[in-house]
Image (cartoon, rainbow, N blue to C red; front, top):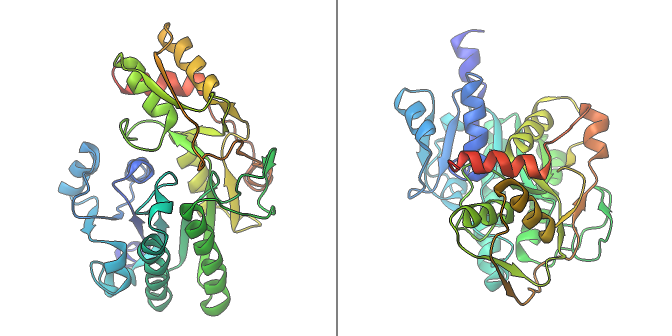
Length: 321
């Protein structure tokens, strides 16, 4: 492959300093890729990513998605050299997105639309969008959520994710812009903030290791589909790279675990039960959310993510315990 061909196959990651972005970046760097990494100016990259950037193995670009959509931050000539965009960025999360619905739509949905306009004009090969398998389906699902099911999100976060999915379909029809949508379940693992507002497994494991109480909303019966980050990245790359029969895929373990199960897994790994602080349930918490991943397996072959207890063991090792 010539230098010119390699240059025109660059990868751009939006939200590269975040949890998923960091793990995806480290995987791509290990494969010899030299991605363009985009995040807000105050974002903090992991030591491994910073070292790669200092060696010229990655290009760091800072700004907001809104600025990028208006033509700033990411130069058009750079965008014209990009083959694949991984869109991982969001300014909000499910638990707080309903506080300012209009603002979140401006910062995420409209900013994405403007950026996709630029991608179409630049001839970007493919956009891989990280949607949310945990929020787009809504609260009426009590079994496995399938891609063909109707989606009725109960948070602004889920609405903006679903809206971007539809815009991608529209831009495929209008401009031929190729895309893949990953409806990811609940990932956890290294580089996820242990003191953030997302990530039950990571937060609980870190607090238990630190001797701090964990906070449980409701009675612990909420069911989620938890997937270790290495497995999530592997699945994302398969969806992005392989010629599947669809453009929309669920990605998770495909089985549900309650919050009490998470506590049990942590207890099994650490040998002691964490302290629990019980709090009232929250209206934004969907009671049951488990993803049907049969479409993914049909198109990409066997997929056997690690168990919850094994994932907790690896996470505890990452925290140095």
